[in-house]
Amino acid sequence: MSAGWERRWASRARVAATPSDEGLFLALAPMDGVTDAVFREVITDLLGGDAGVSLCVSEFVRVTRDPAPARVILRHCPELARGGRTRAGVPVQVQLLGGAPAPLAASARIAAELGAPAIDLNFGCPAKTVNNHDGGASLLRYPERLRGIVAAVRDAVAPAIPVSAKIRVGWADDDALEAIVAAAAAGGASWITIHARTRAQGYKPPVLWRSLARASALGLAPLVANGDLLTPDDLGACAAASGCEAFMIGRGAMVDPAIFARARGRAVELDRDALVDLWRDYHGRLVASGAIESRALSRVKQWLRFAGERDPEVACLFDQVKVVGAWEAMDPLLGRWARARRANHRRSRGPRPRPAILRAAPELGRAEDRSRDPASAARSPR
Ligand SMILES: Cc1cc2nc3c(=O)[nH]c(=O)nc-3n(C[C@H](O)[C@H](O)[C@H](O)COP(=O)(O)O)c2cc1C
Image 1 (tube, rainbow, N blue to C red):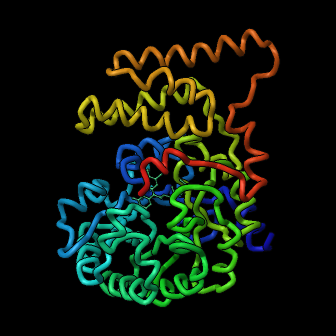
Image 2 (cartoon, rainbow, N blue to C red; image 1 turned 180 degrees about the vertical axis):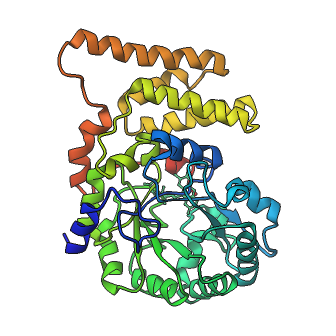
């Protein structure tokens, strides 16, 4: 592992604001339909607002022929009304997705005028509907066009506002990764986040952390590694394979919402009571933000479904609640699940078992090509 990583890891308690800053950069990934402003607030409010998240990214704002209107940008990123930060003070990047430089540049300008602290450009979305309309990962096939988009957006906003690009390692394979990274860097990307999969993979294994090493070797721009980072051990394994020292975490935040703090070396463990409190809080905040009851309920179920893919105990809970039609019926099931865990602990009399995700950490951290199958993501690919 590089000396750079050792230095970075040693100062991991410090929350780096960008991948180039001192400390460890850990971003919460954008996940359309998941990481809306309420989710971002719940995650960044954790641990008294000291959750350890460097940066959040909005769900993508689709830009086609015309610039995105201010109201659309504000809907995706209501934090702009508060200086572009979550309540806990974590900056939120506005992510734009499209294939036409001029309206993307105009949209970025509008976002900047609204107070966006940074802009991200989505070149990773694998959804057919998006790709067939010249958006997301389809641009990976045309590095020169990708460069032109980054350059146009870079020119449209003040130099102090970072403009980053979020890519995958390629379209059908990773052969063009160097060309794609070089294009994004030549366009002036402040940093490049790479989801270590091809577009063809969708969300299927293996995650290709090792491919990122080729991008790191270019040394053209700071890189942020992304894909299947579920535990602090995963960060080390990814750093060793990829040479990257900054990270973005998506689904891992649903499996272990305290992962950002734990990756910084803090002994934080969310037990089942804490998780249930968190889901109740999430539901309450969704309703308070104006979400209709059925939507709030399905958002909580969605969280349990994602987390259940990595945590068998949450999977059991999800099985119990997935057919429930009202929060009033679901809430007691959450409470019963937490109580059952407490009773089991008392009966076992032994040392309190670590949560499944912690027990799973060592082997998850070792194998780069472990066969994780993020089935949920395959179900709702973005
Ligand atoms: C449900 C879902 C929605 C997503 N939406 C977006 C999005 O709006 N913009 C984006 O750049 N990536 C999006 N992604 C990709 C994630 O940001 C991330 O690259 C991917 O999930 C791999 O990281 P992870 O293994 O940490 O989840 C989405 C992923 C999922 C699962």
